[in-house]
Structure formats: structure tokens, C-alpha cells
Length: 75
Image 1: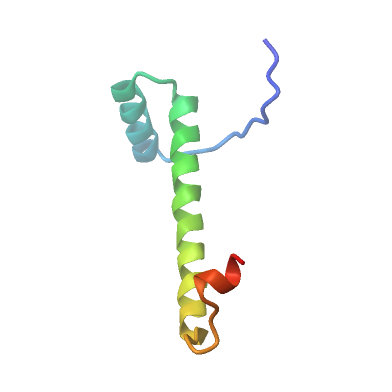
Image 2: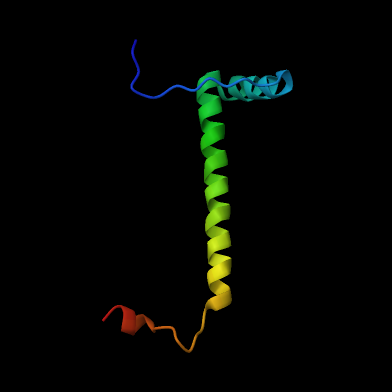
């Protein structure tokens, strides 16, 4: 059966493999699905951190005197 999704081969140390295998069995999913879900979650967490750093940087330059009101923005 051909797939349209790209594949990734990953080498894991035994303890990490055991952990992923345990999670997959506990959730009743394949190792591949569990690895995919863990990678997705890690990427989302990383992205959230990036957005948080951007927001914190913007907060330092925010000036309420220069900001627009809701009505000014949505005329």
C-alpha cells in the first residue's frame, strides 16, 4: 500500500524506545502514530515558546499613548 506522506527513519536509544512503546500500547496506537503525535506536540510547544518570546519583546516597546482604540481600528 503506497502512502503519500513522507517517511522518517529515527534511531532511538533503548530507554526512549521503551517509553514510546509503552505510550503507544497504553493508547492503543501504532509506534508510528505515537511518534508522530509526540513530534507534533513537541513542535506545537516549541512554536508556542517562539510566539511567547515575540510577544514579550513587543510588550517592552508597547506605548499606550501611541496605540489605537478599538473604534479607531474597526471603523
